[in-house]
Image (tube, rainbow, N blue to C red; front, side, top):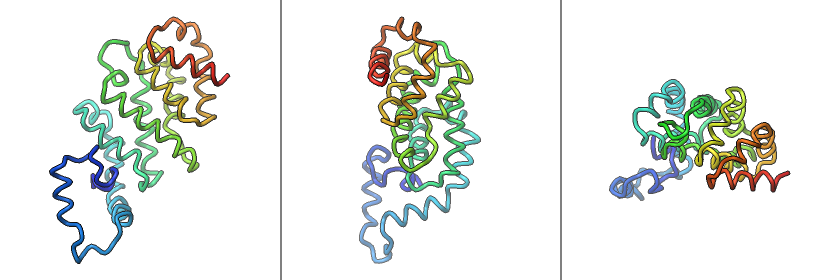
Length: 208
């Protein structure tokens, strides 16, 4: 299942010894389906239970072990998964990631694993948008607006960098949404000295 949700035999997700084990099965007389077909069939048979489990238990998984973010990222960015199964997990993640936090204290956005997970999900929004799907970035920005949590993002380097990443998707509607969301935070953003805040100001000025 991990093979199906991730990028095949990408070493990002698998240890070298595991990849060597998989390779032993290559070329056997019983393997008649191509790689893409096998992955689609594996996902179709398991996605219902897996995505429901992720949606129901996402917060606990993220708190229990940062390494869980690797599989969560693969599941949310999986090209073969059904949109209706992925969307509830993205909505749950946006809810978790939009909670207010105190900069410098333990929080999901500033943690290395949390930041990387959010960044990789946001980057994939360019593809989601091109395919007419819902984007994680819009879900996140809508939640940040609703909870008045944007100042937490602006106030920390990694939070500001996530907003930069949304701008860098190249999706005009998302770029405009970032600008609209930040209109009332101009003074707070200008007071920041982090590299993320500096880049965010540059991106906003480039897209006036």
